[in-house]
Amino acid sequence: MEHSRKNPPTVLVVDDDEDMLVIIQHTLLAEGFNPIFSPNAYHVMDIITRNHPDLVLLDIHMKGVDGADICQEIKSNPLTASTPIIIFSANHDIEKITKECGADGYILKPFTHSKLKEAFDSLLGVGKKI
Image 1 (cartoon, helix red, strand yellow):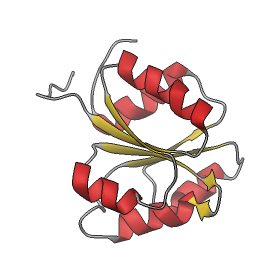
Image 2 (cartoon, rainbow, N blue to C red):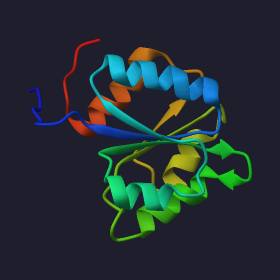
Image 3 (tube, one colour):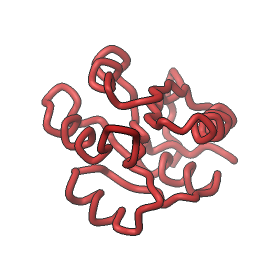
């Protein structure tokens, strides 16, 4: 069943890799999502509380910040705990990290357009075409 919304779902993407941000931006825009970006994790809580994204896509390994710690911070705050989080990383322990930090899903790098879309659709309940 396709889920209908008035506005496109907003996805906050947190990653310090500019190339990855560009790739993800193209994918999200092509799928009709409303992407917002944070090139680091230092102000993620402020961005989430101001923008109320429908989903957070969070890199685990960023300079000076552990994405798993940010994930735990988001999930432990009553104002943001219900925000779905997908973490992504090339770390082969990503499934364990996902469980430990409380994320709702994960994507192993490198990922394809269809894997990204599949993860978003499963958490947002939308049925968009590729």
